[in-house]
Figure 1 (spheres, rainbow, N blue to C red):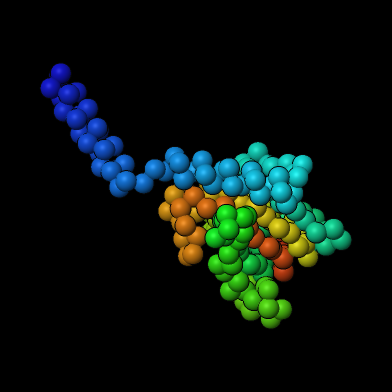
Figure 2: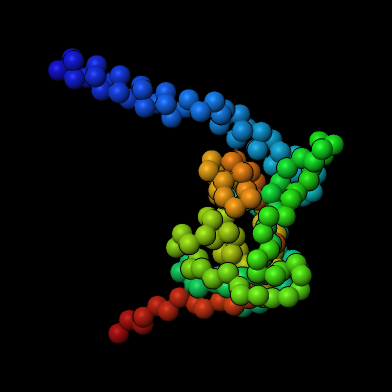
Length: 180
């Protein structure tokens, strides 16, 4: 039995070593991201409160009407996405990485469609729309844990905060069958 346990310990240790042997300090990257995020919020949105998950959202006054979007509702949005970073002068900056829906150009292409809460897009966006109503325009500040995390995706690197401008185009409410 001792040999089996020792063998398992060696195997688990080896897996852990190889998983971390790529030379990347993931903890440091995450700490740097959170420090940059804190600096951004303090500079651009002082006093802003985050949700329990760590999302920040800023709905534009006077936009949106009707019921707030609920989990399970089908949502269609126009959006643009930036990544929070520092420029060459070490100042806070952001880089546009996606506006495929035509949000910034004023030309509206196909909106992004997803079911709120179904896992069809990043968690921060799915949560963010639940604070919005049809017609709402909002800015979301989404930490990497709610965005692309350690893997990154499509112009977003590892442990990078995503900034989004979102406009709710259409909501198709979840149909709940009536009880008899």
